[in-house]
Length: 273
Ligand SMILES: [Zn+2]
Image (tube, rainbow, N blue to C red; front, side, top):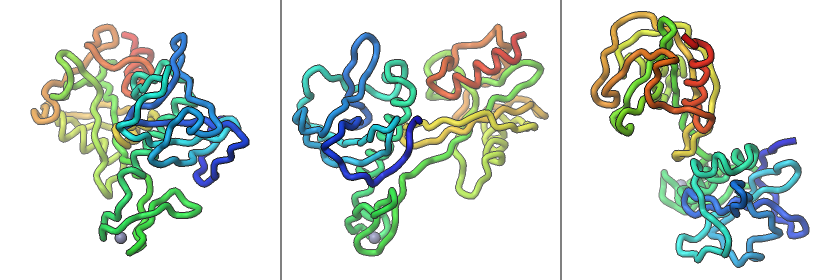
C-alpha cells in the first residue's frame, strides 16, 4: 500500500498514529538494535509533549502520519534520540524514511511561512490544500521544492568527477547545480557543465531523482556523453576535475544514501574497465 499523501485529516484519538517530531532538522526516534522507530501514539500528550504545531501528512500502510514541530527548549523525553537525515538513513526502514523527509520539509515550510512575504500580514492554513494563505492580501504559499541537476559525463569508459572547493580534502563527485527560473532541466545540465568545467556534452539522459532536504531540493540526475572541448575548471566552485576509470576512482560518494552514490555505482557496473 505504501504512503498516500494527504493533509487535512483531523487527529482521531481512537487510533494510534505515527508521529514525526522534529526539533530543527532532527527527528525524534527510539533506537534499538540498529533500528530507529518512529513513535506510534494516540497523541503526543501521552509522552508529555506540547508541540508548537502539527500537520497531517497522509497514511502509511493505512496508519495516519503526523508531523510535529517541537519547542527548541523542550526537555527530551526519556529513551529517545534526535537524529538527522544522514544518521537516520541506515536506521529507518525505507518507507518511514521517505515520510520522515516529507515531514521535515513540511515542518520547516510552515515554520518559515507564518507571515506573508508580500505584505507582511499573518498567514493561516488554507482549507483543502497544502498552502498558507495571507489573511490580508490573500497570497498563497505552497511548500517549496528547489530543482537541482546532477550529471555523470562519460568519455572513453571514464567518468568526469570534480572537486568542489567546499569538499573535504581528496573528495570528488559528479557535477551538480541549481536550475535557474525559466530554464529546462536539459538546458540547466548543459549550462552547469559548460560553466563549471568548460565541456560540451551530448546524449543527456534522465537517470533518476531524489528529494534532498537541505533544506528543500529535488535532485534530478542525468547521464551524458562527452562531445568536445578540454576540461577548464571555473576555479570558483570547481577547483579540480578529471576523468576516472572504474578501477581508479578517487574518494567519492558510494551507496544508496545519495543519488550521487547511486549514479557512481551505476558507472562502476556499466563501465567496469
Ligand atoms: Zn499578504
